[in-house]
Amino acid sequence: MVISLNTPAIEEALLVPYPAMLDVPHELVEHVSRLLYEHRLARNTRWRKLGCFKQALLTLVHLRKNETFSQLGAGFGISQATAWRYVDETLDVLASWAPGLHEALTGLGEGDHVIVDGTLIPTDRIRADEPYYSQKHRKHGMNVQVIAAPDGTPLWFSRATPGRTHDLTSARAHGIVQACLTRQILVLADRAYQGAGATFRTPYYHHREQPQHYQQFNRDHARLRAPGERTFAQLKSWRLLRRARCSTRRIGTIVQAVHTLLTCDYRG
Image (cartoon, rainbow, N blue to C red; front, side):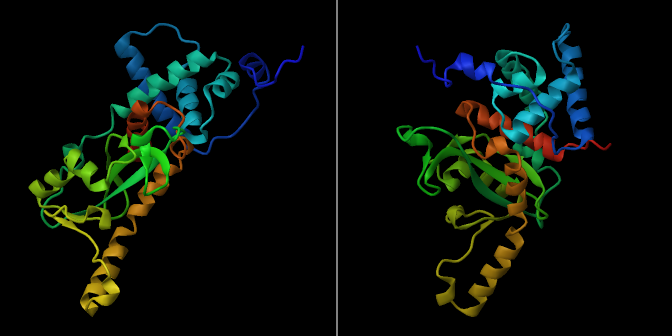
């Protein structure tokens, strides 16, 4: 009888732990471990297979390298189910520290401006899952709205919606348009937000056929929005968000957790 090497039992048996490096600051791992320690104290958690530092490292490896739970379990000497449970718990702890929309806009008002844009978190959904298929990106995924400061610092990430959701529809549903209007915050956005009105400013269509000042406006607009691409680069540096294999319901939590990691003051 021939046994395929692709069977789950054989796959697990072939997993061998090995030493590796993770490209995150040691202080960041310590910061996450402190949050986990406080969480365990609040819950009066008893003995765990992994300490807070190892659990924090486990989660950062998952986010940064997008390793499967089988691989994580083999590397940390725990079962696949335990690895999933530890990562899930850590993500919830990190996500709870992410700011809400109104909290993120606190201190901003008339005379200030922010950059708003949407990004697609690719998923491994099949073609039949039509709500998750983005015609713009030609792939399945989840739409996440981002508000960034003028220097590209991420201020807020929205919850994830199905990939076919239009950016303007998503921005309205999340309350971004109304929140910025209430505070009279100028918003620089791309053409996908045309028609948002309020305080949104978008480029002109067919600007090369328009008067010179229209073309200059588009150039200045593009220059001011350019730092917003830095926010997406920071977000996608966590490889899990380049192709998520988890449930679509967890992507919002993962994005919130990554936001906490990007903005936390672990050097303080």
